[in-house]
Image 1 (cartoon, rainbow, N blue to C red):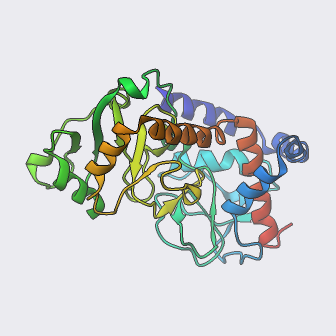
Image 2: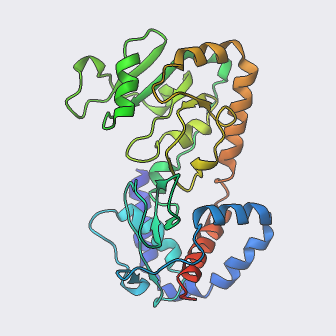
Image 3: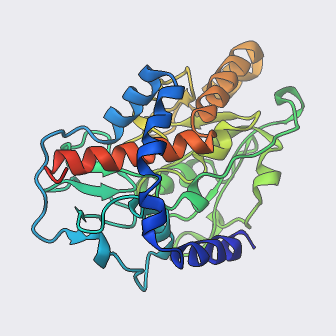
Length: 306
């Protein structure tokens, strides 16, 4: 149902001439002064790191930026901000799960944490990724087990499921999609069901792990290896054992970490509190809009268009 409202709302907005949004740009950019300067500066400089970027030869003018047959969620997430800028300005973008560095300044949803500087992050595919929960179950009342569900399409996920699919302290399994070991297959479980567990694993897929944001907003403890990709959520700034419980890439310390945080609940609660505080940075809708516009403004300045 939320997908339906997303499309209806965005299609309706697309009927409104961009002229009306462009008239509001100056006012909206001035609204940035109502927020802490360091917070704004930190986030803008994180999302766009190259202040002297090259405009790609295949960049398109905003007047020619049309809804594609695929990637419409990405398109609507981006056009809600590009509509505030003059139609002759040009952008280059790449939709989807981007795992590689870009040759020229390109707007993306995701990039490697060790990136080249040409990947400019915007908040794309937000409906899928930016889902937060209202978890009413205290950590102490949750099941003393670890849970994970997902599709196996990378070796990091295969390693996890192979090692722990049958462990009594874990509810870890593969949602069948490819030809994997049938013993690893377990049925889908909802977010609400997963919130009944103390420990929830966040394992990267094609790029970032989709479940990271809702885990951070919960009363469960996030377990994950060091992330290799980053998005608008600024995964590259997360501190191991401060915002999440760090796991080795082979998950060999999973059981040890579970036992430790079961015995040291106060330490678990501190990490959960830090994760929840991180989430609040992304829940002010007005601020999210202003920063998005400032990132686009920085993109146009970097490519010498304004």
